[in-house]
Length: 152
Image 1 (tube, rainbow, N blue to C red):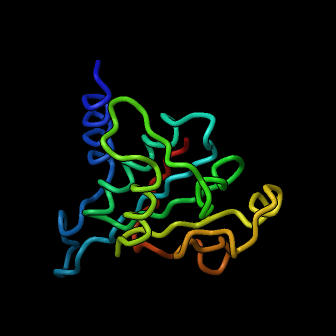
Image 2: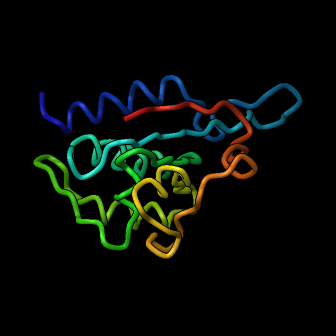
């Protein structure tokens, strides 16, 4: 099965579990709570496929719903200004292009684990513009409904 087919199937299954904006109204005419998607990325340059798949999915889903990305462990290196642009057969865009697009999206936010960042020898000055250092006060609350979580 091609990667494109697998990606399409993943999006269809995900959409079945998520209320897309405006899909269902509650009694009294109130809009249904808006679900959000949390994508956790712990892999880095050692596995381009495990990086590009969640980034591609995040960008696609950010077209219709709020998406929060959380990078930890080896994934933090992807958010460095000096990180390499990962590519992999079957993916149209590289990691840098996807991350920059997500950082520019109104529906996506990119968070980095502060402890993992420190363990990698990184400081806030090393980060791409727009990357937020995760903290308990701002990490949740990006959606009024459920938070659907995917982990890579």
